[in-house]
Image 1 (spheres, rainbow, N blue to C red):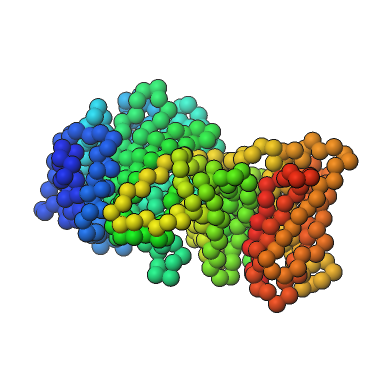
Image 2: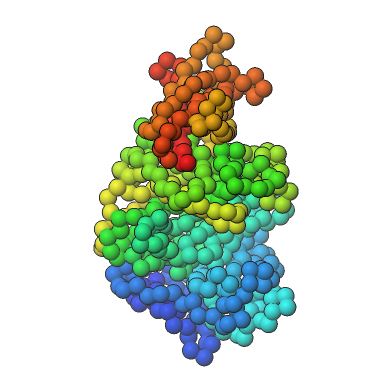
Length: 510
């Protein structure tokens, strides 16, 4: 808990002492919420000072009736929209707060920033409706997070556009989309044998929006056993909702497995992976592929997979131009789900700004047997460890949108299907659809060549042919694995030396 953190604005040296406190005020007394000076560098100073001191666990103590809430009972606690911040001020954004309880036990301090001053937002049960639950007795419980609303779909209604709730998770939508995948502030030790470490946001400072300006600024203080960090998000909702992000990480210890700009999503099954699935729907996923634009300009598409065992893939690069998790299926018939509406889930694209150096995009695929668990993690992993007592800045633009175009001259992979070989049932047949870009204007006598490689097994019968039904092209080949249980595949459609479509890569597992 950050019980006395306002003092940090007046005296930088007091920042850590304030941030590290984890005991609630005694007797249920509310601490002062008098406005104190604030500038954009304050949170970075707090993170630096926080990292110089031993880690202190956050305040997670709650009355039992809140700590033991079920999912449905927690959802019964609703913020009163009549109490939304800036509701009656005629401003382009409104803010609502999340109550603590259920999985969201950690206390998060909330501040409003206006005219160069920050004012702590005090908890009151009057901000919420509790349905048939007994409202908590007046006490300084704090909050679990917040969400922002803006008129993104029509001018007379404030839709929820983003939410920060749980550890360092947050998610957002663009126009006509609904929530799907999530982003995180920082990922640490993902898929490592020692177990993953989950950093969390201790506090947020939300700037009062300005009339007529379609952006809002949020500062955040992150903490964990291994590092502290500061964030500045400038959020612009619209057809493409954008988070301009400035992150500064201060490691307490050497960190070899740091995930920068992490994304988390769900992939259960699709046409490339239905083994053991007994479900009426043709596909269930929030994202269907990893897309990457490398520093040297290669555009890569990697279909996601629900493996039988944990799978970790690395795509090495220097100064990547972008990477993200895409939801390319956009027709209702792709999913046939009237409730989940997976065709309306957003894609997320990370656009690095500045020098990110050498590293790799890491993709983690975790086995799942249902759609309720996120099982896909993607992040940038720097090649060199983040050193203790160092300072590491990362600037990037995070886009939430239906689809990231990438290089428009290249055809995009539209689908990947996998099944038994035609003449050899021990082989696996891969059928890939590509469309768009230069493929739409190829001369009738053009003869593209399909290049397919595998690090194991044998590639048979590569074929590229126009698909008159879709206007695109169909690529197909067979993999004869022999005794191998895993193979790294790559397929590129070329005309001469030039690629006609993005590079398709895939990890096949038996």
